[in-house]
Image 1: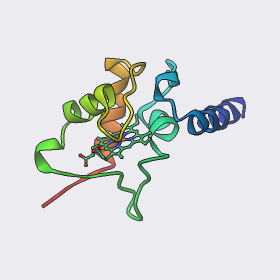
Image 2: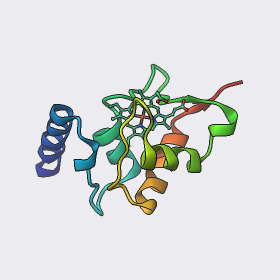
Image 3: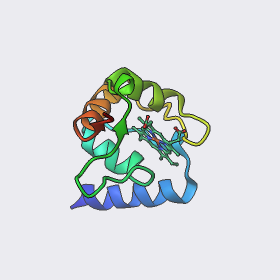
Image 4: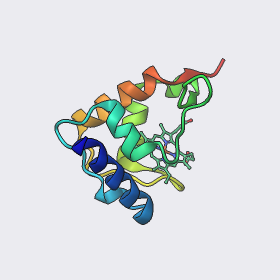
Length: 101
Ligand code: HEC
């Protein structure tokens, strides 16, 4: 229960500030919980439960890790998600994404 309300508060703060630099996952976080806290606001699942439809060459964890670390023109970077956490998050994202034909 405590964890849930903490999550809600964190999410609310994140969307208020829209500041990805403030997001630091804890050791207890999983790929899914990081996605729910840091990514879901901008990347919702579709009706089939898929997050992305990736180009074939981008359908790998390294591509997702790079996005998390560097961001893009329109996406913030997440400097406090470390390599191991990015790996977990990337695995979760890939498991819940499809690939373009
Ligand atoms: C403030 C909004 C925002 C947040 C938060 C955000 N993203 Fe993004 N992301 C975007 C936008 C906008 C794009 C597409 C435009 C672009 O590529 O720059 C994108 C693109 C991506 C892509 C490329 C998808 C493709 O089709 O190639 C990946 C992977 C990605 N985001 C992962 C993440 C992950 C993982 C998180 C959470 C740690 C996250 N994003 C959080 C806005 C966001």
